[in-house]
Length: 154
Length: 282
Image 1: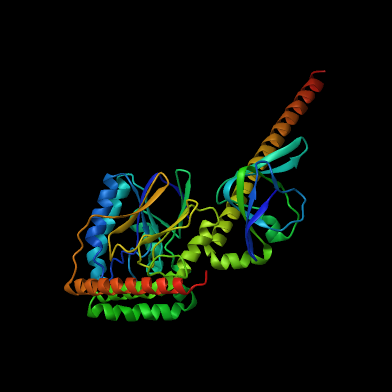
Image 2 (image 1 turned 90 degrees about the vertical axis):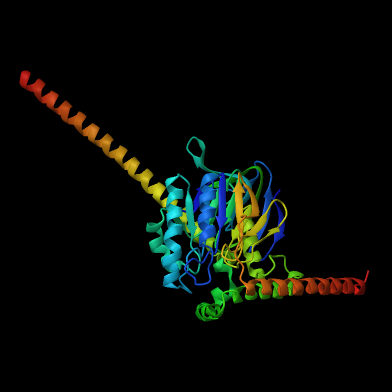
């Protein structure tokens, strides 16, 4: 069970045991978390079971999408080993940035990195898709050519 | 922009103010960089390495080429050299990238061993700089004239800051001479997954133990003293580089008088504390 160690208006430290759920996919909670100690496993439901998306370590962020967009959680976060997190509430987010401006810089860096990785993955998938289409096209052209050849022969 | 690095062996110096008429850091900096290269340390200059706010072009021309040359030799020798931008060298940022072969960063998040360390100049947490930037700039410019009278007047100011902060010391945990805001900012960073925070800017070298393995350091000023920070496999220590600094006669007078005042102030604060302890109800 998570226990509040230091409760403040805008942020609080929370401790989790190994395997404890921090938030579940679809849940409507709004806090974001920063890993102080331990690890957090982020996973998403897939057609053949859970897919592990990331393992977060000391200093990494999790849950910021729900805080920024006020949307349900898009993934599940679970503690790995004894883990302690700093929970930042939506109301305290701007206060946190005011007191710790490099926090905003690091968040932008993380989000920018994610966009770049998503773009790279997208390009790779598109490239694969185009290659597949070209292969099918070539095969089709060849088979059409073969069929025409056979007709001519007969 | 590079902010995340890894290093098992690193040294940090800050506030050299090369180019300032009262900076005497050139010789020690060149020696220090050469020593760090021989000992295979990566090097971080944690802001205000070069001066623009109280600049003397004659001094810049005297100081900078030799230091930049030492920096270039360091990078040629395969050492990583990082320059964290401070408030006195913000406008140099674009040039710095081309000059010394070092990497320029707004701050650094260092992984060393299993420790995560933040190195930042710290001017963003200076209440005077943030709340009154114009007045801060004006005061810095005005201070330049006082330093033209005698560079040692700055030592007097540093001693005054230390004396002033004695009255804050009992209320807030922090480095003597610093505004409590710096320690508060360090705590804010320590709470979000850093094991150690290293600032510069205030020119007051020191360290504060926040328990649970968390520490805040200030790398002081390589212009005023010999303090530097060493990180070896995640172990952070404040050390002094063995360099005999030349002291002017006024420096010596200021030192002697300040030490006597410190001594008396120590006694007075102890007596006040004892008296207030007696008055406290059980």
